[in-house]
Length: 471
Ligand SMILES: *Cc1c(COP(=O)(O)O)cnc(C)c1O
Image 1 (cartoon, helix red, strand yellow):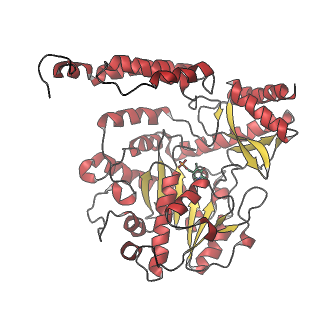
Image 2 (cartoon, rainbow, N blue to C red):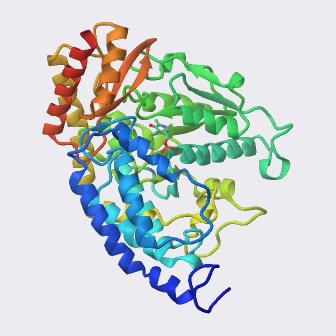
Image 3 (tube, helix red, strand yellow):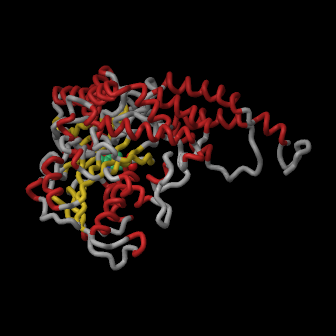
C-alpha cells in the first residue's frame, strides 16, 4: 500500500486517517439525524415522487477512487433521507412495522461504534452477558417455562426457521432417526399441521426444511382467521403443530390452550408464531389472548414490531435448551460446555450483529410495566382508529382484539380506489390485503409515536381519500 504523498492511486494514508475521523463524522451525522427526526412528522409518509426520482443519483458505476466521507454523508442525507418511508413518524400503519424507541436507537448507535461480533463469548463478553440477561427477562416477561432458551436473530422468519428445525430434529430423534448424521432422505415422515392462515414466513421456513407444500395439513380458520380446534386432524408424536398468536391481517389469536391440550396428549410438538402478538403476554389486559402459550415447545417473536426495537431484532424461544443448541450447532457433537453464553449456539449465523444491546436498553428503560403500557397503548389506539372509521361509515371487518384493523368501503372497487388515494395522500399510509376474497385496507397500529391526534388526522385522511374515490 502506498504510504507516500497522495498521487493518482488515491490519497495518502494520513489523509485517509484524517478523513476517517469517526467522531467528526458522527457529529455531522448527528446534525442530519436531528433534521430527520424533527421533520419526520411534517413530511409525506410515503416519499414524494421527486424524492424517489432523486434516487437515480445512486445509479453509477462503482467509483474508481475515493470520495471524502463528509460529501458522502451529505449526499446520503440529501438524497437518501427524503426517499425513506416515514415509519418512525406517527402516521405509518403499514404491514406490522414497529417504530423505534429512542433509547433503543441511541443504544444501537453506541453498539455500532463497538462493532462487536456476537458469535461467541470470547469475541464479545458484553454481548454474551446481555444476551443471557435478556433471555431471562423475556422468558419472565412472557411467562414462558423457566429455563426456556432464547436465540437472538434478525426476525420471526428466522426465529420460525430455528424453532421448526429444532422441532423437526427432535420429532425425528424420537422416531430413532438422527437427522444430523443420517440426513433427511429416507427419514420417517414428519407431519406438519397448521392453520390455513399461517404466515407466509412459516411456509417459507417449512420449504427450506424440506417440507413440501403438498404434504402440509391445513386446518380451516374461522371468520376471524383463528384455527378451528374441532377441525384438527388426529395427531400423533410424528407431528409438528404450528399455531399463531396474532393473525397478520386481523390480529386474531389461535385458541392455543385447546390446541396444546390436544397436541400434548398426542406427544406432538407445538410451535407458536407470535411475531407481534406474543407480546400480549406482557399486558394484564391482553394476556387472555395468549392463554396457554406456556404449554408449547417453541415460540417466535419480533422485538422490532410491538416492542419497537429498531430493525432488525427477532427472538426464537425453545423450551428445551439442548434441542435448540443441537439443531443450531456448527457440526459434530459440540454442545456449549462453558459457563458463558456463545450466542451462535442458538442461531443459524456465526458472525452476528450485537442487536441485543438495543433490546436490553429498551427492556431496561420500559421495565415490565412499561412494556405492558406500550402494548396497551398500541391496542387502545387501534380501537380508537376502528371506532373513528366506523363513525365515518367505513366497515370494520375484524374484532379489534389487538393492534390490527381491517376496513372496507361500500364496494371492493371503492375500497381499492380509497386505498390507492390514502397511499398517495402522504397524510398516512396503510397497506392492502385480501380478506375472505375481498380487497381490504389493513391498519396496523404498531408505533409508540402514534398519538391520538395522529389517529384522528388519519381517520380524516381516510374520509378524504374515499371522497376522491367516489368522484
Ligand atoms: C411479521 C411476521 C412474521 C415474519 O417476521 P419478520 O420479522 O418479518 O421476519 C411471521 N409471522 C407473523 C405472524 C408476522 O406478523
